[in-house]
Length: 611
Image 1 (cartoon, rainbow, N blue to C red):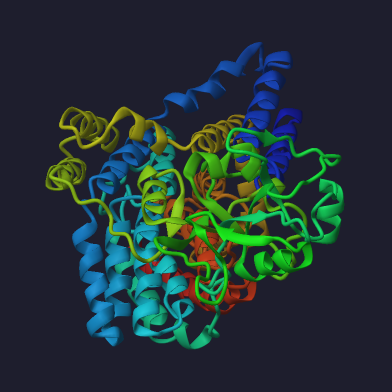
Image 2: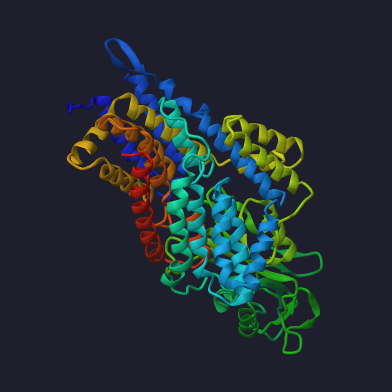
């Protein structure tokens, strides 16, 4: 086997790739910022130091912008928006009703129904909206049927990942791998070409999730149970014989530790500034918000009279206690791309914009840590869960906005007259691509146009469906993949891998490569792992003199197996928070599932491709 030596450009690209993989794991740095920084370094580097051989420029800086027009990226963006139409029209509501009834009537079979339904749907659309659809159903069912939601939510999420492996359009990772294979002049995969290996191996995985996984999971209490005291708007009236009379605001706040005053009213038309030096007089009204217990405490220590804002005729006492008519609690899960991601509640103007009062916060990355300081000033991260209180209408408006994941277990998806139309258009997109009538990018763009033309999707919803982080990481990963291939570094890495595995049969080399991709995707982005791994897979097959198809599929399957950590895939973060899971729970279920899928594909792929 001829030795291959890397050049300076290849080494630089490899180091930049390692830097990119490191940055992609840093939650404090927005994914789109990391991607843009890597893209800038790559483009600037090849512009300032051209990659030449024999006087000919082999890679130009402009070559790395081609990812913005890549067919796979176009298909991914179009499918994101088409999937958004299914969500906004309520086209999936019949499935929600079936799953909900199953949990109410036959909970023993309900789990397998949920797993199979989630897996099948994920074969044709991104699994994030499917998980978002099923999570409130499971939360509501757990409250009605009295079963631990932690027994079923994690298996459900992992089942959607398995289902997403089975078709070309199941995940953005699949589309990327297929697109890169086509760009490299390799086999052009059809939509259902690898359904058989996924059906065989994934079927075993679903059985594990149904029969074994719930027994491996301890009962976990969701981070925000419905036991947190409600917050009430109230007024403290300053009395002549009370402590607050004649005291400054700073003295009152020192006496009533924890009291927060929204505003001070002296007469019907006079409101005072909340300055520390303001002196309170009898009859002044302090507008406050807090739990009933705290409000009664403030009433006692200040010698004031407590009134409910909704009933000023009667002071709060045993006969007229504070009541929360029309108020509900809901959990808001912070997702990447939501208005709360990497922002504070104050910066997002959450309370004034949505009419909801934040009560508590669960940090996904450090669930055991206490949240100290002002809740409104904490910078929120993906996976954090915010407990809010408000009217049913306010919670419904937040949920219908589609900008945040709201778990309340009460509100159904909207079911409009466009639902059947949206399903028909989606069926056309899938059928046209599956039958080879149109490439998936073309059918998806046509489907998007039909969704907008028929009123199933507005431009505003279409724009909100696009994820800038996803677009940027795909473009950057495509650029890195092109650089690895163009500089010969992919071939060098493949040579090193084959050389290290020399003497092993080809099926074992394939199995080792599949395991390597699986480990990588649980650490970094699955799209990054897929785009960087595909050129290396093609080079490994060339070194071995065998078909590249099984090695390309090893990248595709390995990059999708984000089972073992909550940070490998966005839906894992959502489930980590909503189900009250710990990192160890993903290891309990994810590692055995990963081993099952790895061994399964290691056996099935060599048999199907006669290695």
